[in-house]
Amino acid sequence: MLGAIIGDIVGSVYEFDNIKTKDFPLFRDDCFFTDDTVMTCAVAEAVMRGGRADDFIDEMKRLGRLYPDAGYGGRFLGWLFSGDREPYYSYGNGSAMRVSPCGWMSEGGYETARLSAAVTHNHPEGIKGALATCDAIVLARTGFRNDPAGCKKRIREQIEGKYGYDLSPTLDEIRPTYEFNETCQETVPQAIVAFLESTDFEDAIRNAISLGGDSDTVAAITGAIAEAAYGIPEPVADTALSYLDERLFDVVKRWYAYLAKR
Image 1 (cartoon, one colour):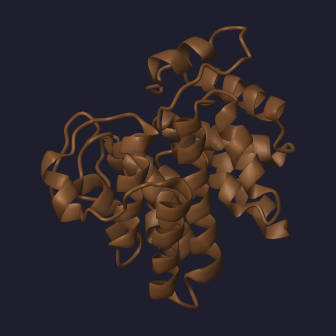
Image 2: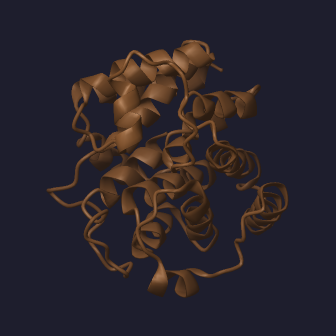
C-alpha cells in the first residue's frame, strides 16, 4: 500500500498542474496526501478486520469522514456523508487507486478486491479496474524477482487477455494527448504501461507523473504495482511517511505488521 501512497503524495501537486516530463523533484514541500491515501488506508483497515463488504463500507465511511477535505469525487463524497450503504454504479478510478492492500492477500485476494470496489463502484468497469490492478500486483509480487522481463510479459498478456485493456501504446505515444480523466478505463491501462516501461520504483512513479492527467491517481496505481515488483527504497519510504499524520501513519505501520504475520 505504501507504493500507492507515495504515488499519491508525489502526484498531489501535479493533478491540476500537469507536467509532461520525468525531470521533477520527487518530493516537494507542498506535496500532501489526498483521498487516494485515505481510501487506501481504509481498505487496509477493512482487510485487517476481515475483508467483508460491511468492513469496507464501515472503514471508508469512518476514515473518510475524518478527512472531509481530502479531495473526493462528488458522487463518493455524497455517499460518504450519507446514511446510504448502497453502491452508486461508478466506474471512476477510485476503485483502482485504493485496491492495493487486496493484492497482498495470499488467499481470497481477488474476491476481496471485488468487494472493495463493489461497495461503491459496482459498474463492471469500476470492478474491472480494481481487479486488473490487483492482478498486476499479484503477478509482480509473486514472479518479478526471479524473472523481471518474463513477469512484465505475463502482466501485459494477462491484463490484455483477461480484461481487454490495450497496453500497446507506449508512454511516448500516450503522453502528448493524454488529459485529465477519472475513469478506470482511461486511467488503469496507462498506469500499468507506466510500470511496464519502468526500470525501478522511482522510475515507475516518474513515468506515471509524466503522463499528466489525474496524476496522483495514475501514480498511485503505478506505485502499487511497482512496490510489489521492486520494493521501495528506504529513503523514499521514510520521506513519504513524513507527510502522513499520526493516524494514517499508524494504519501503515499496523498493515505491514499484519502482512509480516501472514
